[in-house]
Amino acid sequence: MPILNSDVAKIFEEIADLLEINDENPFRIRAYRSAARTIRNFKFQFHTLIGQGQFPKLPGIGQDLEEKVREIIATGRCLLLEALRRNFPPHFNDLLAIPGLGPKRVQRLNHALGISSIKQLREAAIAGKVRDIPGFGPKTEQSILSAIAVQAVHSGGFIRQTVMPQATALASYLSESTHIDRIAIAGSCRRLKDVVGDIDLLATGSDSGELMERFLSYGDVKVVLMRGPIRGSVILGSGIQVDLRFVPPESYGAALHYFTGSKPHNIALRQIALAQKMKLNEYGLFKDGKRIAGDTEISVYQALGLPFIPPELREDRGEIAAARAGALPNLIAYNDLRGDLHVHTHYPDGKNTIIEMASTAALLGLEYIAITDHPEQRVGVNGFRRNDLIRQFSDIEAARKLHPEITILKGIETKILEDGSLDVPDSLLRELDIVVAAVDGNFDLSRASQTQRLLRALCNPHVNILAHPSSRLLPDRPPCEVDMLAVMRSAKERGIALELNSQPDRLDLDDLHCKMAHEEKVLIAIDSSARNSAELGYLRLGIDQARRGWIESCDVINTQRIEKIRSWLAQPKLPQSSPSHLVGHCGSQAERP
Ligand code: DGT
Ligand code: CA
Ligand code: CA
Image (cartoon, rainbow, N blue to C red; front, side):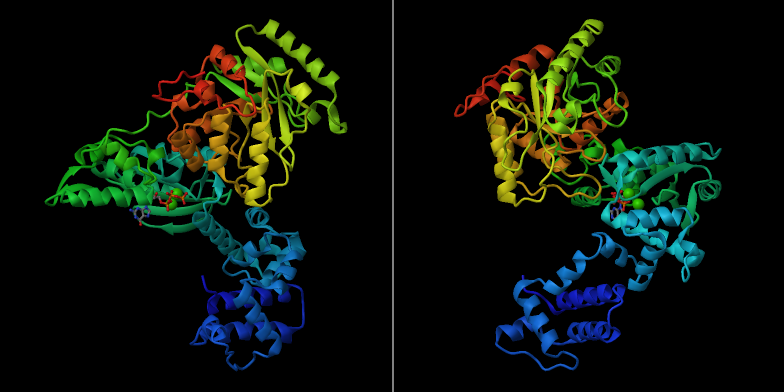
């Protein structure tokens, strides 16, 4: 891809912004800004001219700037910009990207309130602190909040788990309106996405006016973005945007379908309607100008000759073709899990004892759990001590006596070091029922090194589960660069399960990797990695994610009974052998563990 004039101009503008925040020489700042303008408006592309051995003479672009342009065209980078960026917190640029926030304002926010990220800015604006900074005021504070909300909609910015209580509280408040018959949470929340941009609500009933009044006067509304007779948009105290739409009862199903999305799924379905000479929109499904379906969602699918497609599959990732062929996955159900193979007890925050974890798990209907603390959480920072492991063994024995209704496995979570070796010696791993291995640092290795690291860890004969394989942290830490397909194939060959970690800020594997795992027929373990007994409830989020990833019960190792788990764990893993015949899969003739 050639570097365009507009790319060069963007780099110069960012340099000018950062120089301005640094209070550098105003002439230098102006030079970059005006060069950016000149370059953006120049009628020939620099990369073409430079490629022909020319460089145009332009006002304001002297030798220094010419060298910068040549550097950017040749390398796509600018060392000056990279040096400037290193002096700023990583999220400073996100702040500059908010409409209305130039370098001066960003600098003032930083000086006055120590703000260096959008998250901090949102919190300060919601707390009403921004308005007191000279040059800001309540109006600017509001427009900052709406700009952040708009940006979240575009970047998909809130962890769904934190959003749902707000969505359900608001929906239940609205449903108290006497003129409302039905109200639903639609959009990406209904599709069970891990991260969502906003909350979409849909209502039907006899009177939209009263509903809208009620909506706008909800106690947690901070900013009203839009008010109309049948639609409204607000921002709540958390900074999230809510869109509310009212439709007549006969359109409710079609509207629910439309506002559930995803957009690509809707578009694909509309094409199918068109091919059958029908028209599909949020008001219904129409043939020859007559409504033939739309009061319920299922009526829309049926009239198009399709079975109901669960919302979590509606991403235009093959679900429509599968529905047509009668081959939709038989998605894992919420009570299919029989155990949790990654559970902590010793944590600095809110630790629960083995007995407490076991009794809660049993109450939740689980038949087994594996206690898998990190070694340093058992022994402090001074490294691993065998005695501490032995002590936990005896704690587990005691808990087993007290709670015979649940099987408690002795496990560990071991770190995968940078070279792919583990931080616990094999001699100790051998004594455990189950070993969970995880990357816990060095997230930014090259793709090749990261892949080698994981593949080497999978070669350890004691590893049973590769935990949170991509190491992403929502919403900000991106996944590691890794060849996940190679990792999956190796895990499958070695009878190792990849974890779908259910913590709301992990949900790792993500939905696409779940689908890949389903297609590759690699085993998955849906685990909570709970740090206290309440977090065992996160397993539900893991199942949400699994369903988005087309996962069936038979893809998941911990839907099996404990006897099968034991035989899976007992599989020999010879270095060169391929134990795949021991691990069957949905519909295959091989025997599952
Ligand atoms: P989000 O909010 O970014 O997490 O994702 P969604 O899917 O909730 O997107 P949102 O809130 O913009 O819109 C909700 C649904 O409304 C979306 O999933 C599909 C539907 N929708 C919105 N705009 C369009 C459109 O232009 N065409 C079609 N066919 N559907 C749309
Ligand atoms: Ca949405
Ligand atoms: Ca929306």
